[in-house]
Length: 303
Ligand code: GUN
Image (cartoon, rainbow, N blue to C red; front, side):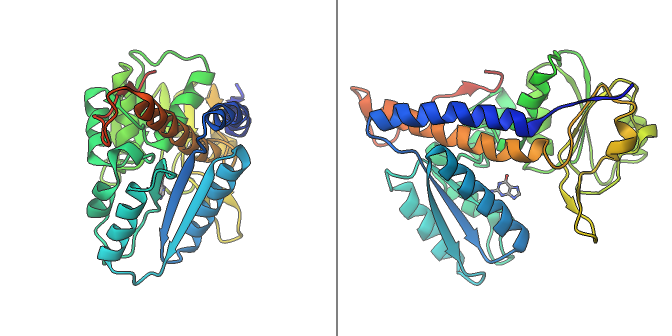
């Protein structure tokens, strides 16, 4: 069997076309959605990611505010920048690119972002929302994976899902979202003994470990759906995922390529969350009982 390809580039393109209509609808009501992207320091990979986010925003008509801060910027100054963006009505989403320099506490910074503008979904409120099955802004990468899985027409209910990688950005929220959809979820991580004994049972295998070639065909069940979240640059400059694509595609029923699978979806879901935030801010402004702060309206993750 040769797997069918789950095309994240194509799905992203069609979603982004739909975004243009929503941007126009907001524009007709005098609102241009805005996303602020803060980059502290000059990590080359982060610079590329931030550049991609800003470019994608501009393509669909979302205004971007790129805030570049020097690597030695004091934490207090980063917090003051966030406070300014929290108060700016032209900004509907605030994202601070991770990782941060070691002198800055990422939790303190992430908690400073207004829950109403937390389009990355990393604030504790949104994380807690995932735990109980609701959140305002689902984190972008797992959200994108969920839509990619949906394109295969698979109902995850009762399926064995194995998530390899337990990061706060991908592995943990991914597991929670699929648990909410009543999958049987296993999370494996760097300390897991005999990874293959877990992965071989997966009907759906999601790999976000950051290790090229980690998943080889012997570790994959015949007919499994394989989602590769890894983005690794090899010494020769080639970009690969965590899965041996050429080998595993002969066993899987569906597989995402790298590049062109999960990567474009992460940026697309960031724009989705920014548009949702702008639409929500407009609803709040139009409501009779408008207040500066509204208790977040929660959306089911499955919605
Ligand atoms: N660093 C790696 N992935 C992400 C992401 O999704 N959001 C942010 N803010 N930083 C990241």
